[in-house]
Length: 175
Image (cartoon, rainbow, N blue to C red):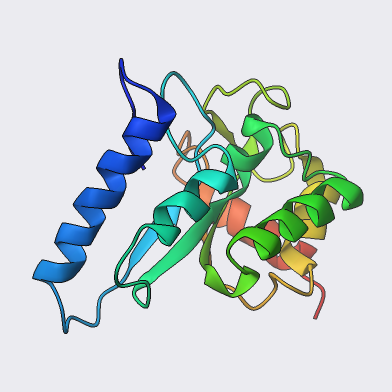
């Protein structure tokens, strides 16, 4: 979602909202949408709180082509304790209250390499990071998330890394 650099979160959100309004106006009639991905909050990055997405969406003239991409590692590293049932429910309730769960169109499924709230954007293999196997299983099978497409953004440190991560995700998935 970009960075506010040497300004403020409010000015960064305003600048992004204005840019999105221009893009949406110039592409009126297009079927393609824009997904706002949450961030870990490193440096001056916007989007580490879902209130940022709400402010942006509220400022858009055309909201019909906007959705959310939920990145699990980013959420955890930003401070959402989604490895626990209570933490996952809390984050989903926050999203529902701010913009609605139905706006989540895609999930970047990654474990987190780092501590809760560290704001360091580091992805880890499924089950090998701070969210862990139980947390990843809880996310994958949550009733509100289980039908949303998933994309792995796990490390590519071996030729079969994607294959191993995907096999584990399939194993964790409850039919």
